[in-house]
Length: 327
Image (cartoon, rainbow, N blue to C red; front, side, top):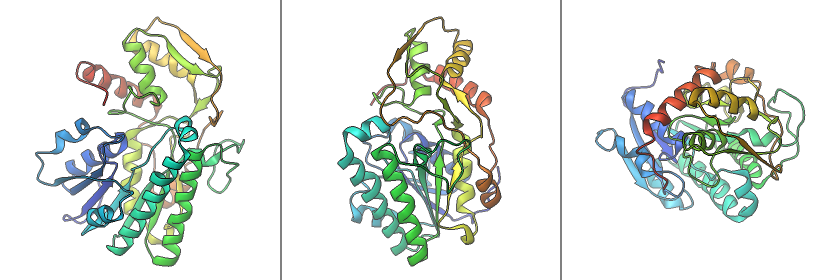
């Protein structure tokens, strides 16, 4: 892909040691830009970014977005902020609502303010498909949201509101990206709250039964990581006319968990079983996106769909199996 940024562009990736953040850092460095990574390593892994330490264009800042002065230092002389730092997981957010508010909302406010004060050109941030809540219609379309079903979803919706205020009142060009079930390399399979694809892959590689909460007919618009990286960079180049908006980032596909298990079975030659447990609080039954707004305003089109993405992901985990460790 070709992205027309000035050669001396400086990018700040918050949560840069995490799954999405480290993939963003990698692509930006490959393109020859300067990259500053801000992470407190509460969720991210140092091993995700160790591969960048010898690159003269890479800088790591160990810091917390809840600390405003850290955010100010991180944003100094930065052109583009890609704000990925957050705590994920719907179930965990129900257990720890105050922590989620302080990190996901308070930390984002710090980053918005620091970006404004430092004259950042574009502030692109991670929102989530969870903001659609219990809205039953498919596909999910921006502007047609339902009741929020978790503290995590509330924090992401709050971020969208604050970002819009910073565009409206302070002239900071903000762009929200509503990610739909992102998967790919460097997604940690070892956490209690790990996403379903790395968890399933890990279980199958270890010869263990997989666990499904619900009957497995729930569906997701699984989105390969390369699509998310692509959307972030397109948003950095978007017209200011579209600032303050949020966009679906997905493939427009609908894959059930049972279909996912079948596909992984084939790729991994897995013969184990499935353990079914009751549906978890806050989980959405079906998720499928209309990305036409992102296509129109950002020029976004998926670069990989589910089948290609899941094959690339399995291949990566197979190569990493001997050296992938939990934090």
